[in-house]
Image 1 (spheres, helix red, strand yellow):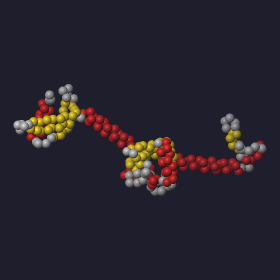
Image 2 (cartoon, one colour):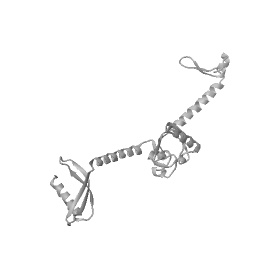
Image 3 (cartoon, rainbow, N blue to C red):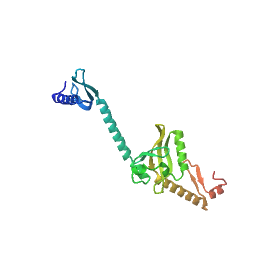
Image 4 (cartoon, one colour):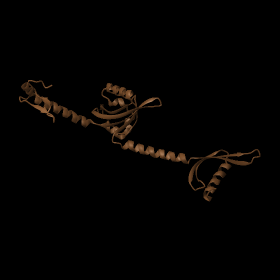
Length: 239
């Protein structure tokens, strides 16, 4: 049934089991009749009949498909873990009560912690200046099950405010509410937006207080803004 070297090995295993008094488990690679190498789980059971003669019973299960599936699963998990750890966005899994289950290094860096491990003993409640903001976030997440492009001002480990853009999903695992989210730092974008608003407000104040009549029109030549001097000159309000 088998190539000589394989038959010799199997016979040796049979003799070892037969010489003992207890069942013997093994995982063995044995080729099929067409030469394909397959993995088997075997259980050899030595026993004696009423006359004291020794016999060997054997149970064999083909593990080849299971082994291939386990290997594929292992590789998939390795790829997922690699993607998780190398992602520039912060990724986190946490209970809705605040316990951090897992996160990547980018998440730790985002909040000013030296490593992922340093965060696993913390609570997400540490990331808020005002827990009322967190309560609103949790309420919205429970209501919709997912939040996309959700902006929040949060707290770094050193107490410095940080603006984040978050995409998060709520899952139920073993009866417990678990959130999975990705976060990116938008602090610089918010700073630029605030500077632009401040600049626009300053410019508006300047225009409003000039002695000259000033107005603005769009491409269709419709008035879009005018200062008080211009409005007084034409006898109209800006609106």
